[in-house]
Each structure stands twice: as structure tokens, then as C-alpha cells.
Length: 120
Image (cartoon, rainbow, N blue to C red):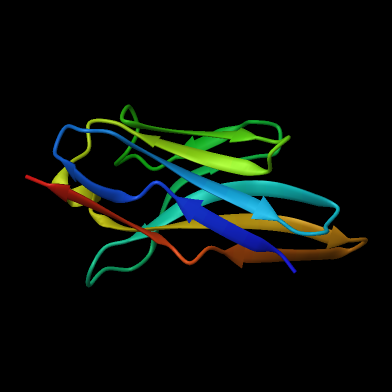
């Protein structure tokens, strides 16, 4: 069983910064692509950022230049550094991980989410 533990959310003023962390654990072959999604009140969940096991990143246009994603493969942890935060970044942020559990068994897991609130 895979567990994802997110941390780092909170309340910040516009222009401020936060760093989210998501630690993955479990007896698996590998943690592959890792990423962050967010869901604002009344809106659909949307992609924020992805990072492959090799370090290739993909960021949503709305956060390019402000957010960055990184990972520590030794700790099975993915990070989302959020700078120049705007009120429209307010949302619940979810960690998402592709996992190779064993031969030919691949699954996708979600974290429980961490709330980020940006005040104007």
C-alpha cells in the first residue's frame, strides 16, 4: 500500500511564498512521475506541475515563472516551490504519483490534499 503525506500548506499574503512537500512511502518497485494538482472552490481539479523520475518538468502556464517542482528520489519526496503567490492560487493542492508496484502493475495515487490560502 502506498501512502502520500503532504505538508506545507497554509495562509500567506499575496506576493509571498510557500513550499509544499509530498513524501511517498510503500513497498514498491519505483515511484515514477510525481506531480501536483489543485482544486479551487467551485472549480475542477487542474494540473499544476509534473516531474518525471529523470527530472523533466512540466508546469501549467498559469504558474510558469512563479512555481517550480523538484524531487528527491532518495527520499521519494516531491516539492512544489510557490513564489509570488496570487489570490487566484488559493486552492487545495493534491499530490499525485505514478507507481510501479511490481512487474506489469502500475497504479496512480492521490494525496489527501493541503489547503493553500492566499490573501489579498
